[in-house]
Length: 149
Image (cartoon, rainbow, N blue to C red; front, top):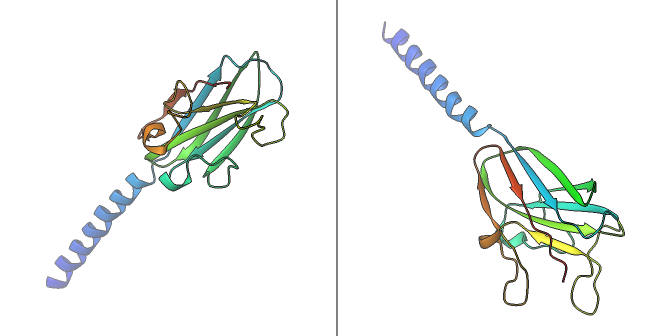
């Protein structure tokens, strides 16, 4: 009898623990839209980050996912799929010559750039993860403004 009670308790504990693990495996979709691009040349590169020390990353080596999208009528939309709950930030490049990198003039980018939660970018408003980040805890649609400097 004692052995049966212990076995039932173990089974209940295992079931309870497995239900907690299944909640952590929930994945969400994040759709990012940009419009108002200055032309439909090239592509738009979307980079997704989840760490303070990785953002911003001019060469896109520290991003967790990167998607490139064609431009249709000066707009582009992508969806990052199967993302776990967490804090994320987005970096976007209007890659007008499709070379996969930010082309610069003297100091400033010649192509459009954008970051989640930023309407403008400048020396006094540089992109940083704390400001650009947002909490993903359900499917989400986000619109990001592209800035041409």
